Image 1: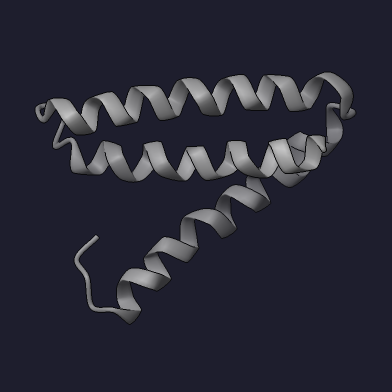
Image 2 (image 1 turned 90 degrees about the horizontal axis):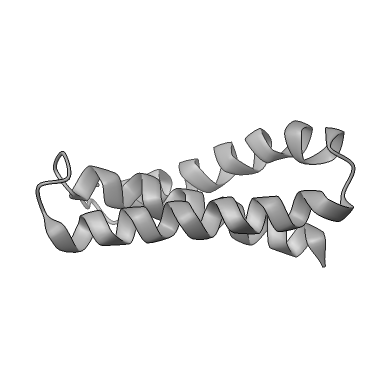
Length: 84
């Protein structure tokens, strides 16, 4: 269950990273709110996942999961020719 929580936290990292780009320097309020909420949810889920997982596991596999999760939207955008 905590691995699922860790993966969901990684997905929320992708959400806030992409929405931060769409906020255009935090000038668009709707995307700024999505960014801040995504950051908070990601942090809380990561904190919850590390309570029962050994600390070495999330710190080793977290960046790998984040890399995969951040490259998938870029791949998706390039396949459909969307400017992300």
